Length: 305
Image (cartoon, rainbow, N blue to C red):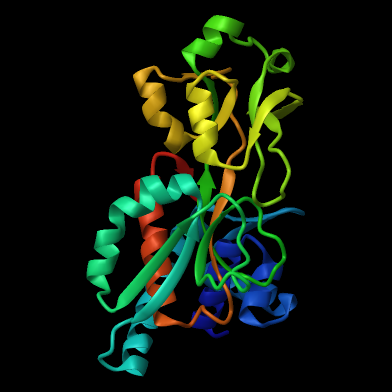
């Protein structure tokens, strides 16, 4: 067994959450990747992954090994990159697309850090809640929320972003607060159309393994997360927001939690690029920087996988 190669395969499986995706990214057969993971687990004497019919997630031992493996692989990549490129630094234009809230609250406040670190890179950042086509739109790297379609993109999973159902006091004064998930059907919501599916996000609540889906009427529907926040603050309806977006308004009292004993499903968050771009030095350094940035800025609002 080539332990370095097996380690690389393991990291790809964790990042993508799938043996199939990892095999495609590595240009290997799924059976080969599965065998490498089994050999690695045997060598380490520990189970690294928990497999179900729908997902692959790391065990506590696997998660610890994943973090060490990522550091080792990054160090090797950095060393090889420096040798291949000599003294030259990452350079050239870089086009990036991120969701609106992440762009405004996470990326823009930190851009000076990235641009000063890589002075030969020029960055074009577009903030949009629609799913762009990286090839057709000429985008080098994007942040995607939700389950990824089987599109051949190279993905690096950041974690699962937590969401919260909330309302403005103005709405509560007019309509009251529901006391059960079923009572939501008598309320109004601010509908949000997901970029990943093009469909309105359902209202789903979870508690102790129980999931409840409720059809909540919406007189206002949007594809823009900033518009959804503004409408929610104005009391136009109940609204599901990313917790990192809602946190300030919840703390100030501008929003209140609805059914606080229940929680909304988390949303997988990925950095994606194409096979054509993944070896570009400027894309690699941006993805590494963006991954670390989101883990740091969203630490309280994200579930690591």
